Image 1: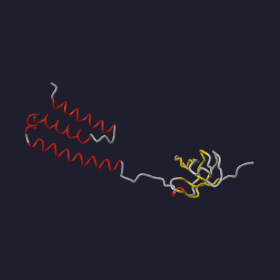
Image 2: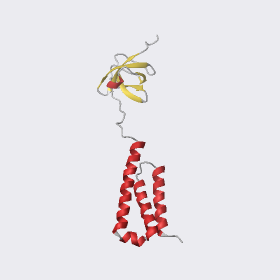
Image 3: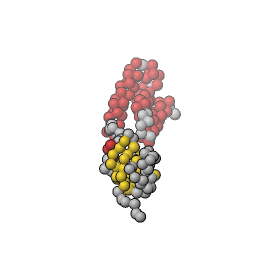
Image 4: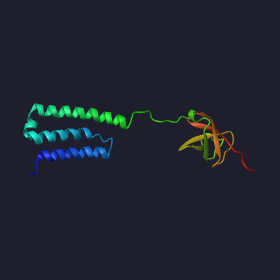
Length: 153
């Protein structure tokens, strides 16, 4: 015979499995609480657990323990760290490729790709697209670059 307690346990297991499949969804804690509630109601009877203060106390204690364990596991799996950010000053000396020619008359028109990022760039001479450049400084949020190779004549 299908029991409501079994349904509650199955729902809790589904929540925990969903958390494993979709990490960061934060349903492992409620899933654990539902499993504990289902097990208690299966052993003691659903009416006894729902109407008694100690049934809810046991569920609360188990939920608290599950919360602490889940937080500890997440801290081990994905430690908190500062995001990696690139500043224009930090790019000084790096080599890049011009993706849109630089023009001294239009300081922010030129574009340079360094790694996977594209930056606005300026130079003292026109540098055509495809040319390698070196970052020699920055002005605000755009780079100052110099060509690594001379133009072929």
